[in-house]
Image 1 (tube, rainbow, N blue to C red):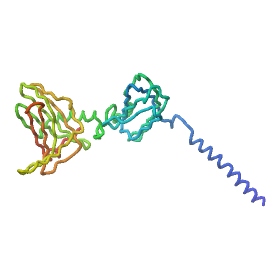
Image 2 (tube, rainbow, N blue to C red; image 1 turned 90 degrees about the horizontal axis):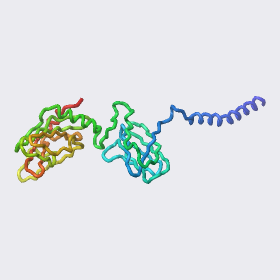
Image 3 (tube, helix red, strand yellow; image 1 turned 30 degrees about the vertical axis):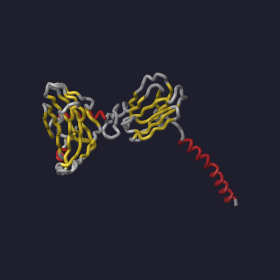
Amino acid sequence: MKTTLFATSALLLGLAAAPARAQTSAARMLQYSEANKLPTYPLYISDQKTTHLVFPFPVTYVDLGSSGLIAAKATGAENIVRVKAASAGFPESNMTVLTSDGKLYSFVVNYQHDPKVLSLDLGAAGSASSAQGEAILSNSPIPQGNLDAYSRQALAAGGTSASESANQLSVRAGNVGYKQETLFFPLHVANKSNVTYDVDFVKFYIQDKQVAKRTAEQALEITPIYVFNGGLKKIDAKGQLQQVYIFKKFTIPEQKQLIIEVYEKGGGRNVKLKLTNADLLKARTFN
């Protein structure tokens, strides 16, 4: 009997001690230290100015601590968040951002009428491989800064996929470039006349090589995701223009061709180039 009572007492004592051990274990799990704290960034925003946060990877999640904050991804960019105050003098709040590489960013947000910092690069302290300070376009896997760098390589590489001249205007398509599911079409335009040339627009479309008579011509226009030097429209007399038109990867069916047309604004000096699928398949890669 004594043995039974002793065993029963020990069991009861063990059960009583179990919650205490569990609480001690839980308390240890909830302890805070410098090792498990995530860094928190101070952020000051205004209702009069917009603050932009540039992350090294695309943003997948944004949480706002209160309705005093307004935030959204910048139009056309996957890694830029714009933040603004909904009204002046909101109480201190917080904002959390998650990026596609799994990193969580935490901000303590306060109101400031005239913030001194309106653009914050969260990738500046990261590795050299991150897209520091660069927009990652929504329709391209390549940051804009890299698109510019590859475009310069495409223009410098030389080569000719197609060329045509008319009315003292020469248009040459350099060798196509390729990087990360993206095609680069370098375009060299030379105005050999004494009259300024104003580019109205450049059109890319795919159409049949042979179009039967009395048959409507089927053409599929394709739109670039980015144009390097796209803001340049005027070519001085005896001047030149170099641009690169960038597209998501595509190929051309054997019986079709790619047409590039350069149109003059308010004039008739229009030039048309023709490329085949073979021109795309021999595209150069970039360093």
